[in-house]
Image (cartoon, rainbow, N blue to C red; front, side):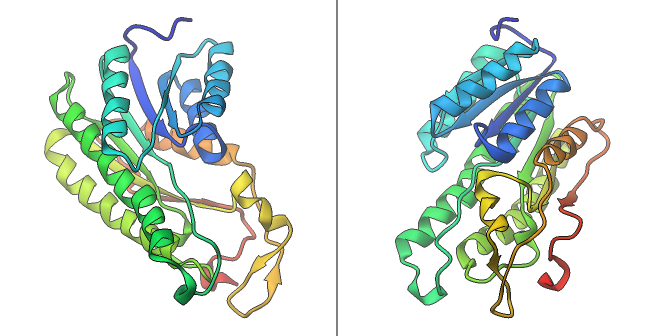
Length: 255
């Protein structure tokens, strides 16, 4: 099926080429969404688009740097040019800093995480608001990738944890400010999904007591299913916060 033209439901997925973003894009396509795949590297995005197309779905690739406001603006402009509207934004692009003592982190390392995880999500939300408020039918939905670290930190994770706590504030503010315009906003907090970023779980990761422990993981497809659930709720319902995690991973008390 051609990726060009109008469609019933349209989703923008940032960080859509690998891991959680890929799982979300495939799950959303399975629910009938046309998917706008964004990320820094074109090749993984093209692979996901091809996978969606092979099952009759619709997807386009828009390489994007979420730390660059002009790049973000171009992403949403392209989405509307092709599909005429926007029904869902999944703010998923993110990164961490090296797991080193807090006092050894450079300002540049701190800013890189803040610019990607927090400011990038904010700028994408701004663009989505502008479209969703003005389109007909009005409204849409935004889902933010929060992480278990939006609640409980890991050792040596101050930049990542700080941004994910801030994402919770962005989620609440977006949900509040979106009410008048039929824009819902929710947050998914993910724990130990099997991706390239969590491959280290199998080798062992630092624990608060100073030990290193191999942690249980879960298939990343479970995250895709959860995001599809949130995305397909009727307009008068919203999953404000949803946690999906490996059943036996450390979380409560991180132990």
